[in-house]
Image 1 (cartoon, rainbow, N blue to C red):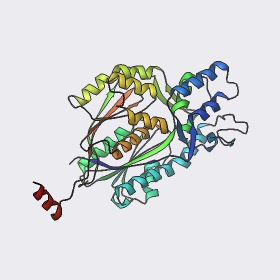
Image 2 (cartoon, rainbow, N blue to C red; image 1 turned 90 degrees about the horizontal axis):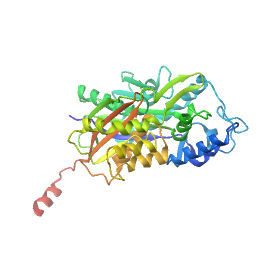
Image 3 (spheres, rainbow, N blue to C red; image 1 turned 60 degrees about the horizontal axis):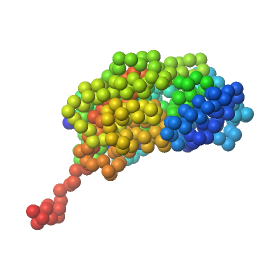
Image 4 (spheres, rainbow, N blue to C red; image 1 turned 60 degrees about the vertical axis):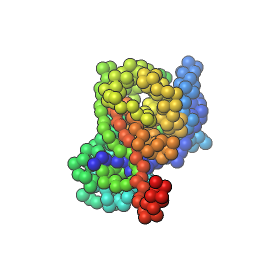
Length: 377
């Protein structure tokens, strides 16, 4: 029996920031010289993002003061403990909202959940996100819990792969996967090009999926197979470490170029002779999508869903590709039995791949319908 994603629920914080507004905010920071201002404006404008969401209400404009912004509109530099405290305060509720949405869409009672898999790289605490999901949703205290930490933007596919393995071992399993990232908690003023790129794309969001092999005639996305590829370069070009002033992202300009060079080989080894109908590519940034499209010689509209999610939500790390899969799941323009190739990129540099198939609900046979078919025949 093939494991199937029955539903995907998403949640974002209520504070929305426009790309123009946050660009001007960073460019206006005290001590920012004219060269850095030009770099900030060029980088933010090239990102092809219109809006993002954040748990930091003070970044929403209006002159609000908070932990991260002082009364004069200057970015503060809170320590890692304060930033992580905000993660503990906000991430569980956002996770609960996404998980509840997934349960409701699937029509699945919480009592059916047998396994919980959580993924996050933007905060840490114990008992962790997996524990909070069980407690906050009122799941059985015997629910198996697993947490994938610090895998970065690529974590959704390993989480789904784990769910698929659980379903293969236990056919009646119902797995809840939740990816929640609060990237904005690690924002900081900087003249570093790498940090400016990070500030121009990252955002906050959560996505949750219900997976089971006991899907019956329900529609969804079948999890066919997965693969992991470590590229020959890039270990130092995409990194995520914990510093005294928050988590420190390294995202150099080499990342898109490495992906552009390596993507054809990784995808050819994974797909073989299979030709996907639809692509779900993690939008680490516009330049990464451009390199993937060029490297795989894809048509102009092949990454439309990825570009739309990037435009409307930014890069929410591990949750982002789940937003894309949700769009594909509900897109009536994607026909039943369409194959979906998923790609996501994480520190290493790692390429995580997935192949899924969209399934429609089975049409129930009724006496009236059978008579109609007989007459039509």
